[in-house]
Amino acid sequence: MLFTYFIAAIICVMVGVYNFLSSQFLLQRMTTFAEVNQQLSEVQTMTQTFQDNISDYLFSRNSVSLQSYYDNQNQLEKIVEQLQDQSRQQDIRYVNLGGNLSHYLSSAEDLIVAKRNQKNTEYVKYYESVSYDFRLINQYIQSLMASELQESSVQYYEMQQVVTIRTALSYGLFGASIFFVVFILINLSNNVSRPITRLAGYARRVAEGDYSIDICLEQENLEFKQLYESFEVMVENTRLYLESLKEKQKLENELAQQQIMSLEKDNLLQEAELHALHAQMNPHFIFNTINIGAKIAMLSGDEVVCEYLENAADVFRYNLEGLDNATLEEELGNVEAYMKLLTTRFGPRLKFDVQVDETVDLKGVTLPRMTLQPLVENAFVHGVNLIEEGGQILLKISSDKDDTIVVIANTGPEFPKEKIEALYTEEFQEHRGHLSGIGLKNVYRRLQIVCRCQRPVEIVSADGWTQVRLKLPAE
Image: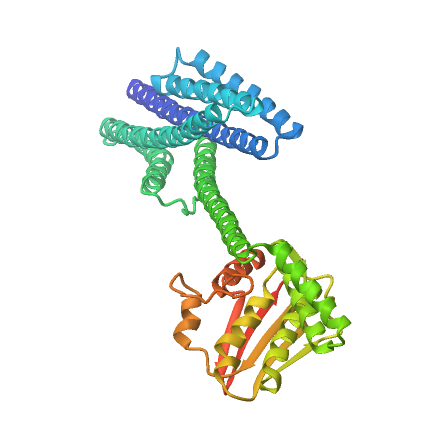
């Protein structure tokens, strides 16, 4: 009987040792998996930082970004050496990763050299190669992490089956004869199979893409506690990595949108300059002719004609100054000179009024040149000019907290709602100004880019009045 108990105890110890070794193997495998994923995550982060250094230098070309580039290059070269040293013990996937990183560093160095030597053709080729290698490395690291996670899950399932078989065998050997062996085996089963089963369930949910699981740590068994902690760290790192990828994708989309807006702004400026140049045929001859006419009228004592020609000269001079930014004071002066021409021409049929809030700093507010005059001209052409009498144009400037509000109101027929909505789309068919050649759509798009908002201009037409409202943000 004692011998039987002794044999049973030995078998029990052997089973316990086996289960302990199994748990240690799982712990070691899980720790190794977590370390591999952490290393891959560090390579991913360092590669992203290196790519950012390249972008910073290409756009700024300063010594700080170049130094950061070389620092990160040295670190990545060390990683490539480590991957090549470890390739004797690891599979071909990490050898491929080291080769991709080596090619990426080589292309990046060629890109920097081409940029510094101003070789544009080679620069474009190397930039495309670097961008392609960067995306390829990111995708490759993602596939490696997914592969490691899948292999870990399979090993969990296999070990669970082995432990279940060994536990059942232990029950068959000792369950009928020795009560304490059964008790030990039951405890052993609870302490081993339960955490593994639960952890396998966690791994299954992670494999299905659920990273929001609430992992209950194993408190009774230290080894499984460490295993659970490692698994929790791995899941958290994977979740953070995916979130960082989404955030980077969002930032890249925003950067691309800003680049598109910048190109669109350049196209609009070119279009406006072409129209302005078209309207400025023989500018110096016409400008000198107007000035000579004003002097002749002044010498002849005709003050009305003299003032009319002087206003025309002021408007023409402002139109010749290009399409750079101007102060609100300069824009207001140009509009007043333009309206004096119209009021002189149409007499009592047209009334123009300006209201400026004293709190507004006209010299401190800037906006694209030739912004207000096309809007006032549009108010006259599509509003006041279509009625026989009672024509009024009101220009009101006020402040709203840190912003400046400019309102241009006119009497006349109401502006059709379909044209107002078309202004916010690409279907707007506009009238181009007879003076500057700049249309309402061009003004609207330039304000969109400068003010960085979707609707910088609001048009309201009701009760015989049409109001165009501009909101100029503080700089």
